[in-house]
Image 1 (tube, protein in one colour):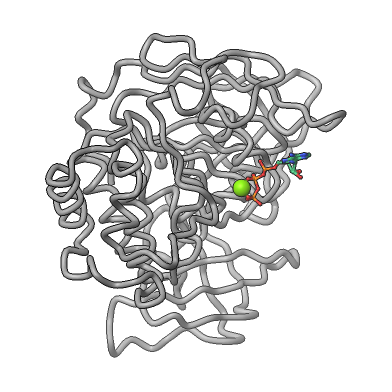
Image 2 (spheres, rainbow, N blue to C red):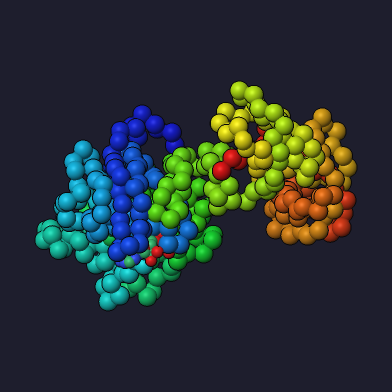
Length: 371
Ligand SMILES: Nc1ncnc2c1ncn2[C@@H]1O[C@H](COP(=O)(O)OP(=O)(O)OP(=O)(O)O)[C@@H](O)[C@H]1O
Ligand SMILES: [Mg+2]
């Protein structure tokens, strides 16, 4: 969803250098390095307990790092208290003040600063317009839907115009459809204000749709940092490939290695494959993982007419989702391959249980994973 206004986005804005956070013997964040650019929408994606909130709290100044430093806009902020940082945080369980109206919730930070009333009024009105809640300014939080509450919390976090907004699971309370709409709104608001957003989430779809770049976090470390498409199409490890989306992975033996090509044998995927590969593999490694995403496999009742390799299988299980169907196909060697297929035609006969099917793919869709 990012626009590639890369020239304005390429100034380092937040530099995290070797940050660790220990709680007693436990290492919650382990030597993390990260550069975030001005105006970027950056996501930290990781499973529960991977250290996302802890890292965000370190950025906000709510936790002191055990080691490392954090620089924002050229200034070392490592020992600067939270209220002196150009940063605001929207907490994982953002709570609106229940007895206050929407207007007062959003105005809270400005009132505390003793800003003149007229100015507060116009700023809050502007912010409520941005989050499309102008009509709701007199409501109390218990008269709002989940998505509306979320937008009030966002307005409240943005009203003091922080240079950086840290959002911890901002959409966790929303249902799927609302999440998608809110994601688009969030991106629009972020682009309009030019604020740098750092979003923490365990939801990979959310991270993919929102972000300019994603860092995948596990056990306090970053495993891979890159744009969503790179993380998805070129995952660095089996863990990432599996964590971000679905993927089929099979063992393959290495037959030969050249500078930029590897030939492998993978019985489940029909035998020998030649694959472009620029990484390095130790000489003593003989087996490797061959992977392919479900949507990159074609499934048919007849053999494909193209030159591509194909394999035969039997549909063991299938789920119909309307727009697409997901198949679990059993291969002749007893493995299961997951395939997803767009349902393009209304009148098409749907491939179903126990059908004999042919699976094929473009060779470039095969991925080698060494880790
Ligand atoms: N104050 C603390 N004292 C001791 N351990 C802590 C403390 N805060 C966090 N932890 C531990 O650090 C690890 C990382 O916690 P953190 O809250 O950063 O995870 P998270 O990635 O945000 O998870 P979630 O997705 O569930 O919110 C967890 O194992 C947690 O129990
Ligand atoms: Mg958390």
